[in-house]
Length: 136
Image 1 (cartoon, rainbow, N blue to C red):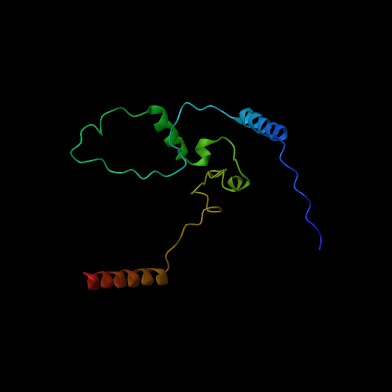
Image 2: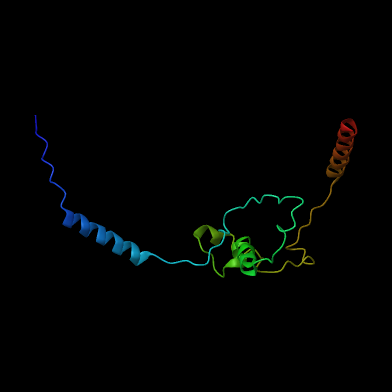
């Protein structure tokens, strides 16, 4: 059988050097925040206040918080000038590049009703009316 190597006892100087290096790395990336608010990207479930309590409704709304919440609920096309991800590129421009001219018969083909579509429309209306009459 192979023998396990002996453990080297911990050196307090090396342990202190590791601790100093860890603290230095933490302080280098640490940021001090003094403005605390709710994360606007998480849904908040509000709890109704007590019905007879008047002091719950006192106070003004924080305009900065309200503006952050409104911005978080906007669509990406209103928030940003350019798409932020590759998937956003597919549907970024939703307006047609050329306006439709309904007078041009070459490009505009409206839906036309034939005898069969008129017949089926009345049949479905009658069927829906019968279904509504039986449920009431």
